[in-house]
Image (cartoon, rainbow, N blue to C red):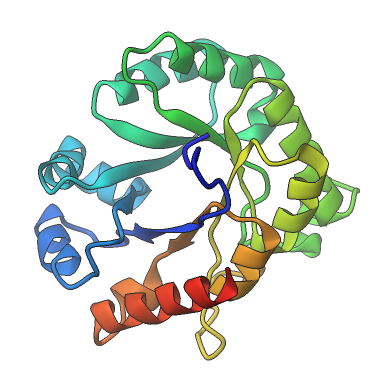
Length: 239
């Protein structure tokens, strides 16, 4: 587990929801140095590819590559091994890819010289119960996330991406070892955007989250550094 000395010392991951690599350095320069993790998601990765990763590596930042891999096991295996060559610390797959795909991802990571930690997405924070019904999933959303979480961990995955609403239940189900990464973090006065299952930083810490992924509340703030500091202060006060 990545927080081996104190597994409940939660950390912030800033989601680089920016379209161009040239926007990365100016943004990071405004954010407190104690935030060392940054997320490269689909928009930025498709736009700039490895350039974004190289910028973060050059700034001594740690990388959360959030591509939500969901494909046949062999393709995911190769993607994991390729990601390991670029100093990626955390890499996402979809738990709904099934046990064979999850095992392939976990095995591939274990075979790497510089293995990324693999975290499996349970249910996107943009989904609610009506969305699951539309997808033909009849079970309760929280139980759906818990079932996928158990499947992923049983398949050798290092941890899970889940909303703060499911984090406490998953921590209770799975114990202290799995990493829990929670997006959907908003300050009490913050706008929801396209997220439906959100919580404050303090709530996420109390639920047992290891990593809090924060994008728009920091990236789109008038003062990103001040916004990041408010989130850190609320996290620290919750410990």
